[in-house]
Length: 566
Image (cartoon, rainbow, N blue to C red; front, side, top):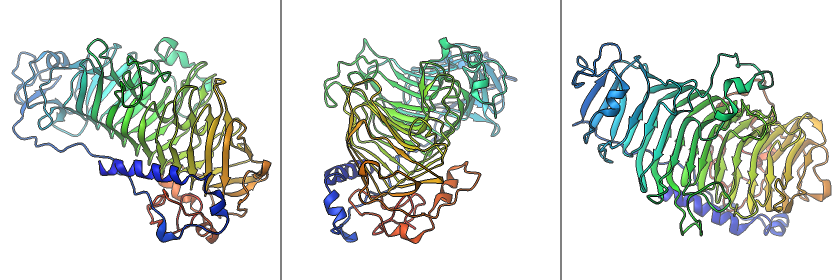
């Protein structure tokens, strides 16, 4: 809880200081002394509670040597099928182990598991390190989980012509707690055919032959988590960990949270008659999506909907929106209708934007998000731009902090290489980021009012480095933002940075950043470190700055520009 309080403290400090309000003080030489600055600490997600696996009753399953007539209690007398495990009577402290490398056809349903927090129901492998393989036959899903207190590990799941790999579906009211999915691989989910796609532009693919329009649905994909307990009343998840899994050729969504009891008015279909965040709003809480790797995702990579105090942490998403089409919008990694979300240490790259699809950014803070922190992310080569901030007319979207990230060569031909800000986005602080573009993608900031619902407002940019590797006329379009403040940013090779007098304290020199040709991999973000000494002296100090930089170096007392303090 202390760690989550740090999030709230840092946001409140920052918003109370407000870049807009402190402009006169910061430009008059009366800057805060280093010892008076209150820094935000590094935020570490919680870990799932460790358990004692002694005292379990263990069942073994082997598709080659087993028989469903066996008792399943030893490796020499294993069960054979997924159907047997679905139908078997579940007891407290039960573990089901599938033979490493074995192939199982069909589907698995896990409900009425009788697990407890101390002794959750466990699914894992035995007899080797290779994952057991579950092959769906084109149905709704391969694995259906309808209970809490479960640890699901080390399974390979494929469902080439089916809708989902795993469906976690709450059918009871109240909190469904303590679910872990880890070490699994989801491959060829809702991804038909055998068309070559690696190194191929989506514009040359028949995307509908891979995933039909009927199956191109956000609720279909690798792992889909949904609350559907309408008649029984509100249901939600607590303490859910989706960690260290792999997703490859998955459509439409890699990891999707659909919380119909966490939707606010106008923020998506929901069962609750939303009043406010303290009345009749039931978000998922303490959700950790961490360490997952996603490659070639038909639509969105990771979507966290209707959550509170949750994390999108250390994930890698390449080639999202790969099967996009007209009328569909997708982004790499994003929350919506959530509050107190931390989006950090992710690498999001090569999100596509073609075949009539929209968005295409690496990151997004979407409709009705409050107090979102986006930090230490490496966002590069996304065709639709760096980060999207968007809202609608009725919802409250405020308290977003975007800091200490690296945005590299994201599409800025039409939208923002750093950000696209659209419709009624409220108070937002964007600081200490590095944004690198070129003369082909010169639009750094894009703003619009996508639904004619109202301008965004109170957006502050400071201590950022904006540079182009080739001289160009940079475009900073804040025409749909009221009270957009640029303060003490560095601009290099961007000719019209002061259009409309937008940054009275602009810094104009080469930060000394050399970008190598190979920039894939989170660790490559360190190559964007400036070498010009002035970069580490010219930054403003203010409450809410991070106490460590992108590389983990101490940043206390250092007035630095961009994402690196040394």
